[in-house]
Length: 498
Image (cartoon, rainbow, N blue to C red; front, side, top):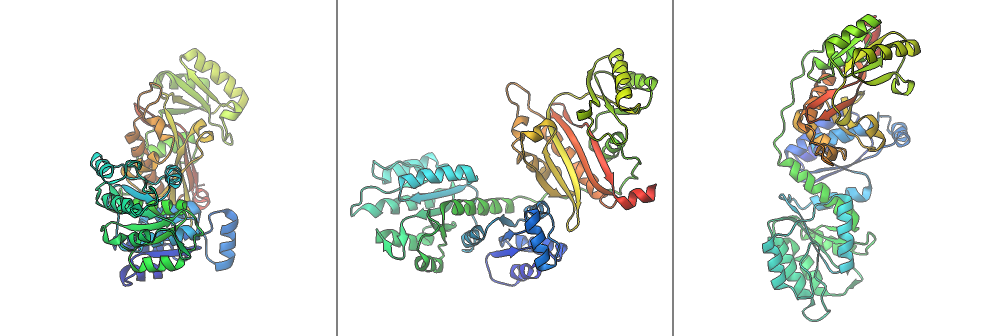
């Protein structure tokens, strides 16, 4: 597969590369090939199977190759600028849209349709799918008002279906020309009832045939019905540089992905951070040791002390300052909160000593005394070592927000703070960081810096760890602080250290 992509990217005149793949036998070759295509300005559209555990099992038995985790492949596709789709319909429609060799400028798609009802449906679909419709400027709206009959509303999508008279097709001609010239329109789509067995207005077919001559922007004809009988017309239009897409939802998804590919290609690549040599892993790797290890890579952690008796607990309280949190640090106590092993809001020495007396009886004498951080939005950071692509970093809502926001973003380590911020902003929970109901905005730059530093730590320790988790990282207007962490050493490394 990687050899095919490399050949098409470097020597084949093909304008777009469409790939249906099960797995990569040569993961490094896949990454290099995708980057070669990206640098050559050729879109690669990939439909990757093996997204679920069962389909991945079937892919392995069929090909004899490892089907790496779906999240790892999606992270690689984003990193390398490939367009990932999840069906053959989406694969073919997206590849068709990219096939004319034109790339969209910044902006949104402009759509012309022959139905008011279909116009509203496309607005709803664009909102649901996340397709950017061009926001028409005042000049564009004024031009449309002047050119169109008074019963047609200037809008995007633009319904040009007036009364079926001899002048019916004239509104489409004007609307297409005006949207083609509008600088805010990055692509131009035209929908009309054009079928091999029936064309109710032949002039509209003429408009479709001349669509690529109106502009240098990407253009396409589309049908809302996915099973439209238009193979002959589609073949004719393809020869004229006008892709024909069937199914409004699939078409708008293709537009969204093509626009995102073009926008990403205009961004200056961020330099990867340097990965220092891995620090020795202290064993046992409890919460305090994990936080301390990550702090050496630049992940800020809440000040903590591990204590095993009442005197040490009292001294830690005086040293750290109040308010404090007391947590069990006994080996084998993994879900401390569920077992009553976390006590919050300890504001003085008496409450700290009383909490320790109770906790030491219930779960054991070994505890962590930690400075309580200010309230904020909670994130979780994680890392697993993918067998094909190495350290894979995750960011998601943390703490109790995990139950409210079922979402995660992945990327290969290491990466810089710009990419880290993009990952965080793709999460719906990031809206809370902008400040709601009078709360001050959270420092999302600090959160991005912590996530980037975490990725560097994961890259540095990849040969010595099995997985890493930081949950939560509390993000407030004062910064981002890791509160709880766990580094699981790789089995061979743990055995050697012991």
